[in-house]
Length: 305
Image 1 (cartoon, rainbow, N blue to C red):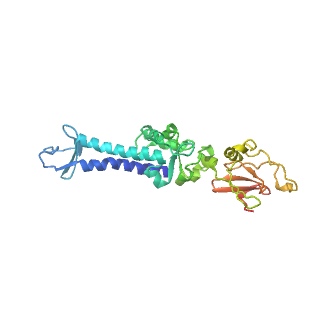
Image 2: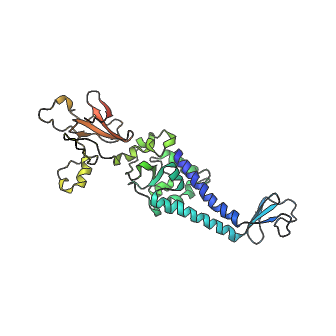
Image 3: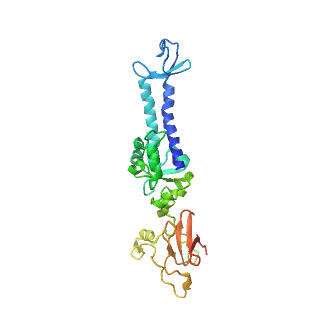
């Protein structure tokens, strides 16, 4: 969550500067003693006030700054243009704003792809609600991002987006209560500590090797492999077997568990690797595949043997 907060205030500072800088450049200046000054002859003028005929003034020391209504409108339009360019167009096409780029997070669709301009516009428009009571202290959006599964504010819910660490951009997002509850490290709220389980559906290909030493680079599940190989789809199983496959002839029965090991804290279901004669599972928290030891009942680094 910390990364997301930092990104928000970086973007907010840019949008505010996009209004104040043009406003300052367009503002007229004059001395308080100038007869045309809006506070000339006023005994106790307000620090900021309205100018007759439209516009505002502000003074500091002996200098008075004036901004007409048209100048204020111009500055506001420039700020709006910067907001649309960075918050909508850039975020829609890349999933990043300047703040998200700096903090290493991305806004994505549920399938992990870039949100698109329409979804990005909905996300930003919803700051009208998420920003209550103020954009400096957006309690509504902040509280929702803390308590909802997937850490989504109203803009994410209506825009159907998620905010994840950049390493999970492109991965299918599978929000779970486990992923939400596990996010205890505030420095990586939208990173590996909280969204590991959300990216489990997009685990990279397994690393098992055949007896010939050739790497088996099929997708993580037989079902995904079957989808990529239409001619073999009819013969491929839909998912990891509920029980261990039949014992090959001459094998030591003690090396093949009768039933799959319990999933435990593994985010992906175990699958049988006939070459290693063991169950394996992808563990995104370790960034790789782990192997089940039938003797100890523990999961450990995958064997290269």
